[in-house]
Image (cartoon, rainbow, N blue to C red; front, side):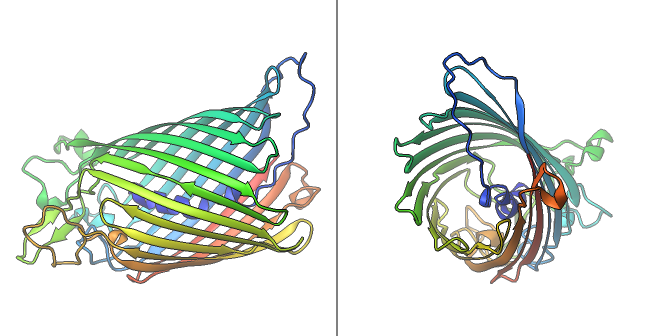
Length: 410
């Protein structure tokens, strides 16, 4: 289920920074400055409810229900302290807890009342430390993360670096990440060898048979350069190459062939990805900002995609803004995809996962943000409240809705 969370995270986690306004720190003479104690800067709490439905479940070979709900919550703590010179040490601790129910995953073993994967909870803490020089604007940081769900666990680590030009108009950012995952190889009930388990912890405790485990390692970089072109226009170019190796197929997803046979999904153990994006923010006046984004994506499985996005934040008052947005995606699918019952029996790799098919999709929504100077509801420390809602449609028939609530405390 990890790929579901990646899709959902792309929809709601960005809300924490999409309209962030950071109050500039006062630069002080720190030549004889003693390091301060660690202080709390801000707390962000984000909750999202996601629901989807469709009739192309990969678990049952490209047909059947895709109904899924997910309730996701994250809390992050921003803390800092000053060191010698102009250095500032920032610490970001984030804890996420998601709970989902999935009707399609319950079809791994349709003979049971409820399979191991019908519902589950995912927990994912992370910690980032960044040391920055407030005079030069340069920063260096390290990240560690962990994630656990019923069928996998993941350990992650990363490094980030920021360089700022002397005139503060050009900024370069680098981020490198590695994720070392371990998957349970869960198979559809009818494709399990004799003595092979279901993958549920209860089944294994009761002597129902063990399952295999396989690794999946992911390595990625994000290289970006942002430029203030003039007082109204800013631009950002970002390149995010990545590489995956290990078990990339979801083995409890079925595939059906033209000769009537059935097999578990099989995909190459290597995958290269290369997204390239460009963003322009144009400050029309004190009340309107036009944000545009375009991304081109390609990978070694043959997928090609174009994504365009438009968002127009409108400042209604000094502390209330509304931001309608729209995103369109056009994707050419992988050469390994075929619908239910149409796979070639001689094919080495095959999938009926419609996420990897040729498709078009649209996502439309809006968010409202409140940031009154005296705090939300008059509470000084409750600095911002944001509510975002969106509706997603896809040419394959999949639809989804998401509602997100974000609160900032300073």
